[in-house]
Length: 184
Image (cartoon, rainbow, N blue to C red; front, side):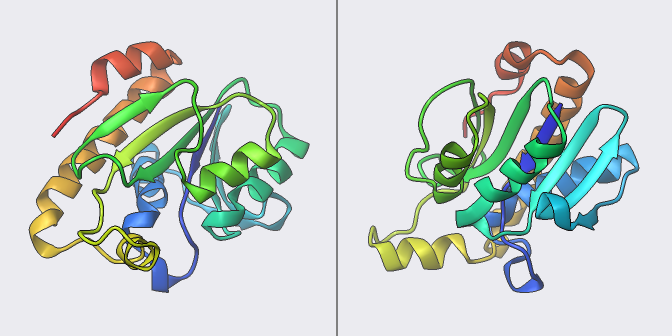
């Protein structure tokens, strides 16, 4: 089983809206008692416990598919789950998809270009910028959460981590989807 958290490397992007995939995998790794180490052959930061692989691509968001492709050269996981931000969902929302497109998410676009294996998605709502322009959207996803958003963010991150722990135990995506989908 492979869990991939999407985000951008370097401290400049730490804890931004676009990095929720990294942040949630960090919470999960902490709970599991594992630590990420950089693996150049996977183009990312990697942790493993038994047959569970955790990957945070360090290729930057728009090239995430390159890291997944590199990982898949070395491993053949039975399932892949991508954890990513979603502008079209309000903050506090958690959704799961077994199929579907990239929804305009450049990290998912890259994964679809580089990976022919089917994958599941965990979508973390981050809301949308007030101004609906390309520049405003880019600025918005690269911002940290506002102080007043922190309690709701922490709530949904904890909920997402619990969903992942459930998934690791049951390996049942549909059951996770049914039990942990969360609307604001």
